[in-house]
Amino acid sequence: MPLTAFSMGVLMNIFIYDNDADFNTNFIRWYLMNSKEKREWGELEYDLDTAFKIFDGLWHYKKYKQLSLFGK
Image (cartoon, rainbow, N blue to C red; front, side, top):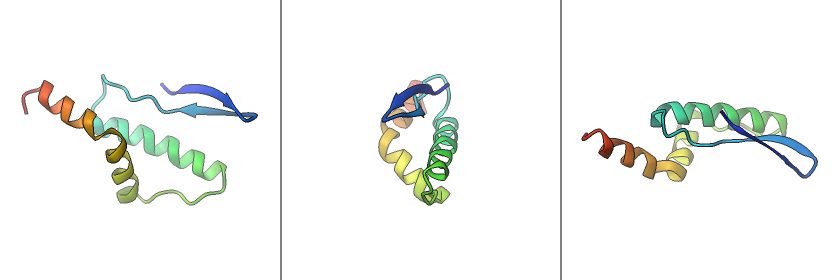
């Protein structure tokens, strides 16, 4: 569930990484939120490849931490 914040007169959702969900589920949640935000601000949305690279750059350590917890 995203955190809701009020900034600069705008109500917005903030992505919070869900440690109980897997990396791909978190990516999908982030991508949907990011795409909605970009549409609302009249910006071009990321294509899936670009979005995944950005998300992986932000959260890659969660992916490796999750893999090590399951012994993979």
